[in-house]
Amino acid sequence: MDNSEKKEKYFSWEDILNEIRKNIGQIILFGIGGLVFVLLIMLFFITPKYTATTDILVSQKTNNDAMQWNAQQTDLQAINTYKDVLKKNIILEPALKELKKKDNYQGNINSLSKDISVSNEVNSLVISINAKAKSPTVAADMANTVSEVFKRKITKMMHINNVTIVSSATPSDKPVSPNLKKGAVIGLLAGILIGIFKVILMLGLDNTVKSEKYLSDDLGLVNLGVIYHMNFNDKGYGVAKVIVRNRMNSSEDEEPSKRV
Image (cartoon, rainbow, N blue to C red):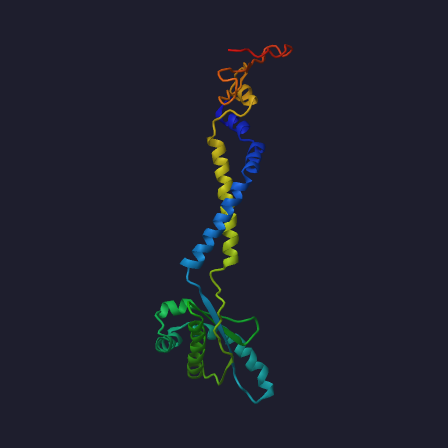
């Protein structure tokens, strides 16, 4: 019998499930340990990040009702252009200077560009400027400063006569990262998986004989009998009870215990 066949019998799904059931308490402890470990990392080693959002409306004023619809369509087509301009240095450089004066911002153009994102809904003239920072106040100032600089610059660049700040960013004390709930679930599942892997690994490394079937079927040995463990605390010290089962003749009864 080759090694692969032995492993199939030795590591059946039933064996693995039985081992997991026997060690379910240990696996749960691994899960709790993983949960606690991830939460500690998030709480003490990962800096929280906060976000703030400013909404601006960009459109062209016209007193001609017949041209109003055309103006709106033109504005919708120009939305992507406005979004691109918001991320360019012509907007970010003046905003960076103001942020350094106002909040002692330690970043540069590249970090400011990464911390600022721009989005808008389909067929909407409202553009959302989202800022992320380690401080809720700095995040709000970043979004508001970029929107103010854009409002000043776009008027001259593209001759837009109507840029309105719909809503200014306000500081929020609730961090967006790290996500403690998500981290706790990941830590719990990771701990449980590690616990299960450990149980299966220990099962594979365990070479003890656990059943007569393993001796006869897997190793091809003949079971001559069972020798019971001597209890040295028992009154019968020095006496071993041996019960011999003759596997060659199943019809014979068990032999009586012999006194050694």
